Length: 71
Length: 413
Ligand code: HEM
Ligand code: SF4
Image (tube, rainbow over all chains, first blue to last red; front, side, top):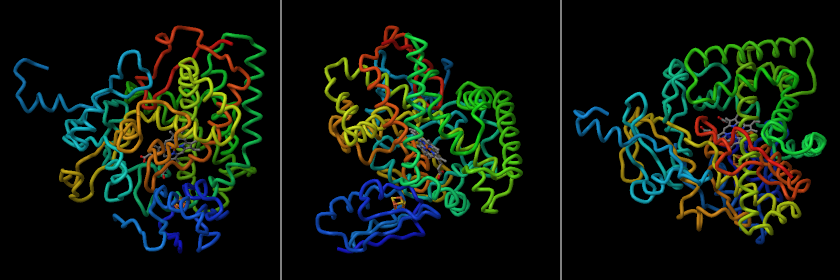
């Protein structure tokens, strides 16, 4: 499992940090997502998946399961 | 309606946004919306200016629209779903500098990036002790004054107002000015003249503040923004104004309407759920999400205007047509939330749209969550027996405001 974060799309809403704080953080400077690990543990995958779905900006992608960008 | 109205006129009339909540159910959205959501989730809507646009009432498609920036937030393309005579002169023109809620990327992105660092989950958590202190002080004052009290004036409005003032660096002593002006701006029936006067008054207040902070920087958000050197004074005043308005009325109404709903809920046999909210922090986090979903105080939803032709559900949306996303209805969608019309503080309401979705998703949401968690817990820990001081039917509801809630909540203990 690999997680990717697109910092250009990120709007710093913090949903990922709220949902999976062991995997995501936000930069002190601009609030954009920072990955604490690119390879979540198997027992983290469910919450990471939730974070991917909750991200309002479609900035997160888990192991090829990218929600197609609309714009 | 005149007797001679044509069928087309009649159907346009029938396609107005339903706004009447069911009698005796202050927390439920207008019942027509459930029918629309089930039968025609993308449906024609006639706007007050006569425009034939759309009403989106289910969760999936509301989320789709909010996620797609081809549906624009720009002020010059905006329409209101309900008559707002006071806003008419402002529509059709570009947003004032700093009002990024009414801009699209990349203008929107520029402002948002300057602010998101100030609203991270971590930063907001640092405010917890101070928010707790503010809540306790206001509860002490209520005890001292003795029952009854108006929970809005004594608790729900001061907490978020103080918090946003301290965060931004606005003197709280000046709150009467901006609270009055904000209330005018959110009143549906405000006239163009009243809106102009209130905007000017708040605008002048903010411009003064920016000048003052430039001269005497302090440890607050506005001084920090000034120090970036990225924004003009006009933009700074606009951003501060947006944060001030968006930051206190919303949370204040969630606190008061939420307290009303929690009192009801406890008395309908769910004292255990309220006890869990007071006891267990995780239970409190779930309760906050559920109250956000169930109450969805942005009662007429939000709007977007299509920049190009786009298929949505079974319909083709044409460029230039405005869509209203009925957030209260989307958050009661049975395809997303089981038993959606039931308040259940133990459910996971994750994925609700009370803070919107997409690039404009609420900037202040992590702050609002903390204010609510602390606000409800402190209140019901102090007054577990809190109850209404008037019959429930007599609580004045904010049908007349863009943000739903209660004008006053007379309580006793
Ligand atoms: C429970 C309380 C709150 C609710 C229900 C709420 C709701 C919302 C919603 C629905 C939007 C999206 C509007 C749209 O997409 O057109 C929004 C945006 C926004 N909110 Fe909140 N809000 C709350 C509290 C706050 C607080 C405390 C602040 C500030 C400290 C705040 C600041 C903002 C700002 C600046 C935006 C514009 C974001 C952008 O355009 O990128 N809100 N809010
Ligand atoms: S949820 Fe998405 S937009 Fe929000 S901080 Fe995380 S990656 Fe960025």
